[in-house]
Image 1 (tube, rainbow, N blue to C red):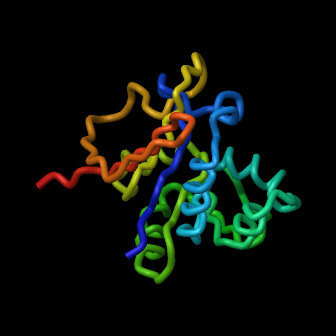
Image 2: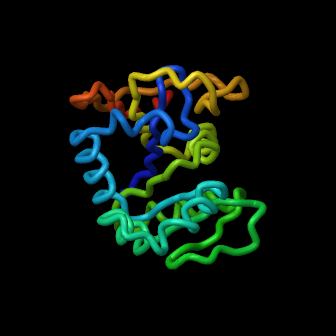
Length: 183
């Protein structure tokens, strides 16, 4: 069965916003190889409204390969209650109240992972709703100091089990967690 994977870059102080401002000097060959593996395992993307609006401006005409071809060709589901339509190849609009049913249908179909890209609010809501199968955090050894954080004071207690952890040459720790199934 397919799984829903939320993957984010995160600083030591929990910031996930604007990783372009604090991550690129540490993004090394190991991190690139891991990202390529993740891309290869993912054939469907979930995007929140803000990430969709940023990405649709860049990726459809991008020559940043091999990412551009992959991102433009795979199926994309844009989760939004405020957009009326989406205008990108292989993209569909899904409202928040349709998301659980859409994901259940997608998970029953053959294919690779259903991944998120950025979309911090979406990852947070998937985790809170019990719809996220894995949370992959690429933890950068940097204190961003300011910006949106993945976890805020509005969430509830959740237990996670660490599935894997690896360290890159520049000190990024890529940790994968699964929500603990309470019995």
